[in-house]
Length: 549
Image 1 (cartoon, helix red, strand yellow):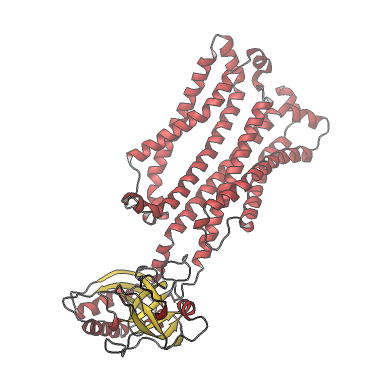
Image 2: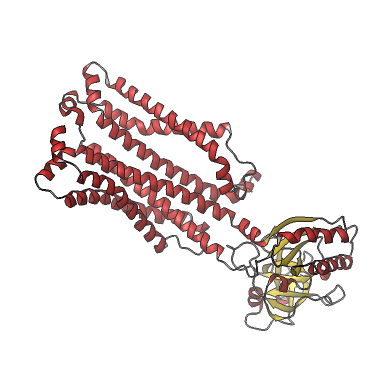
């Protein structure tokens, strides 16, 4: 027993959880950056805080001052972020459609903007508490003795380096998950659906039961519609079916061999049933493996027949020839409907590209009529231009029969993978921002270390240290932090891959190509982030270093 609201939301929960997890990881990376920058700024202000302490300021007063500064920082960033969000929301919603995620209306309202602003203030306060407390615990004598250079301190340096390691680790996880989902999406769109999707326009035709009460009358109307549409300039073929592939996914019933039918009413395997008019398989490009197609002679007075998909025929009959065999189909009555197999066609992706091979069976329309039919029109050139001419044909035949839900098969397939595309695109954007933040964090730590070691590096270069040696030392220090982050991030990426395994297609959670690519790419970016501080260290003038000392 499940609540209705829960049941309606259930299909979208995995997607939303992944997106929320991506937001949370990105927020943590940003907060680690903020904490590291606040610590670096506080260390540079130790002399100022020492003077305030000597003049009588208590530690609590200093901590409140620093927290107040952080609040202003958070408010400024939050307001700027809200303004940017309002400005770019239309572009984001157009780039990342939310209808596939179950959102009927999407946009930024006051609750959303208020929550974002409160979150920005709260996170800066939370991650600014530790730097503020550490900065307030001044030792006036030592800090004043150090003068404007402040004291770097091994503990503070290790903490900032630890923040960079954590940033690299979280970025590795985000890059790996986004890489897995992106590769999965690429594998998905390469899947062959089992029919030709090119130049195929789809629509719906609703046949009024009051006007076309018998299957024969409805069939005559549909046959004439098909012939007139086929005669239009540019049209090469026309298909009519009760369920178009991928767009219509319902209609599955049980099928078995007659001897498998049991008194309990549950037997055989599930297969999708489709009602088709002659020419359907040829029009959609579904290959006929053996036997014959549905024909006009398969009417209500003729023997009941069925065409099976290749996988269903193999599951029922193994390697034996199924043509002429009888199958039992559950139609909801006490006894199954018995039909003769007249043909076998290729497998088609009925539900989605990601679904496994679907069992399918096709009935002649005259032997199993439907009130609503899907129309497929294949044409040369501009497929969209055919729509108006098809409407004219339908209007001439019967003005009471509308043409609904017009689209192309490519649009249907594109819509069917909208969830996968949305997640892949959004997480890739998140990973790009995370990579930028981690690079900035690594650059900031190294640049700060160079600034604190300005005098030391000047002395070493005056004593003969080469530029390459100084540069190599700075770069190696940055790469050491990167390697530590990768060492923590790659196991985390492996664990995260297990959580998204249900959303992957054709890719393993521990895909070595993705994990190796992420590690190599992150290392290359880290080297780039290390070059600027190393170049700055190599350009230190020993005379200038002694003068500042």
